[in-house]
Each structure stands twice: as structure tokens, then as C-alpha cells.
Image (tube, rainbow, N blue to C red; front, side, top):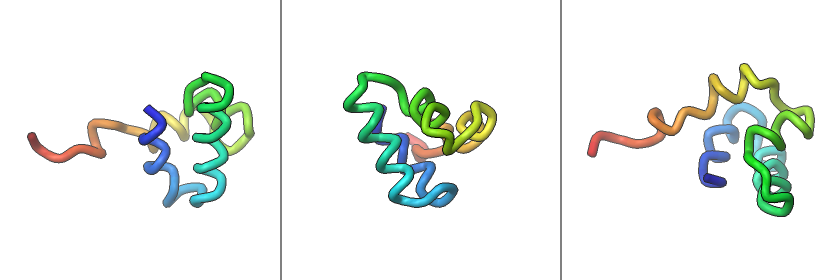
Length: 59
């Protein structure tokens, strides 16, 4: 989901995170693919920082 990009804001800033989301949307790719392709994150960084389970509260 493109919404997961919000997890990157504190790490790389709003503008880079937005560029990742916009590029992924435009190309039909994942956030992870574009973060790496754009050179903003490594695979390990993305996996460490984007954790959907940490973004939701108890249900």
C-alpha cells in the first residue's frame, strides 16, 4: 500500500518519501522497488523502517 510511505517521513523526509510514492504509483511498482531504484534506501533499511504491524494499534 502506498500509505506505508508515511513510515519513511522521519527517516528520509517528506519530499523523498512523496517521490517514492508518486513514482511507484506511476510505474505500478512497489514502494520498496522505487526506494531502492531511486537510491534513497537499501533493502535492509526499507525492511527495518517499513513495518505495517508497527503502524497499527491494537484492534
